[in-house]
Length: 278
Image 1 (tube, rainbow, N blue to C red):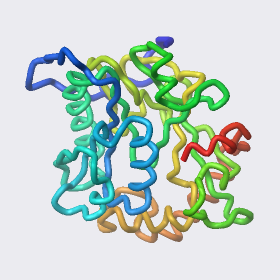
Image 2 (image 1 turned 90 degrees about the horizontal axis):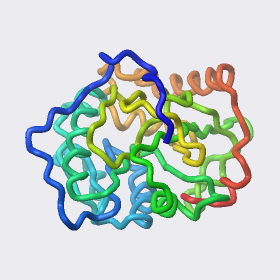
Image 3 (image 1 turned 30 degrees about the vertical axis):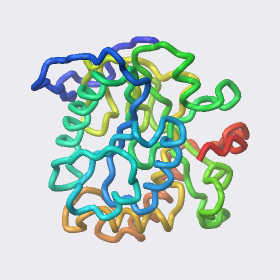
């Protein structure tokens, strides 16, 4: 773990002020995973399978709208907590809720992982069998993951075949975020509760650099059709939460075209395509 200068103004960050004292259990469990879900028809079973097989369904902790989101049933076996936000797009509220749950879970667990519904944290497959092995072999207090957005090359890649692993069906990604934060470069794994974040968790304190062996593979852009349908289904389209919302399909196609022009698209290394982690 390498500390660095904070990459954003301190007043960007939110801090959770605990309402209860920190009381550690004498028999702490090793790993917990927090996820935020808002009408995730597609990603729920994939996320559940990936993190559930690594850490056990009983150690998955889901924030969502419990009374209104029918897709949460797809995560049965996990633990559920009311998100408490009237809209999934209220990132300032959501980050405080995440910090609250991190604080509570670190009283029961040694390590708390946060992974959004479309984020899959994978270590270098040439060095580690999986994320669980990585965490068992690395004792850092905090981990910032490298952010990589997998992308659908619309003109020469077919739609995703859901009967096969996603890894291996896409060949391209691009780096999203710097070595000290921003984009999908996030401090997603912690072992102490004294942390602060900005909305979206893109910047955080303590300020640490990315771990060279830890990748956050973000699937938001991995399939044009699924992404467009997901955006239209998840949000109230009357709210100005995203540039694609007024017309999901047209807006998303424009976003994909802009990404190709303005991002450094790279081939996904063969070692990730072969590992088929999810």
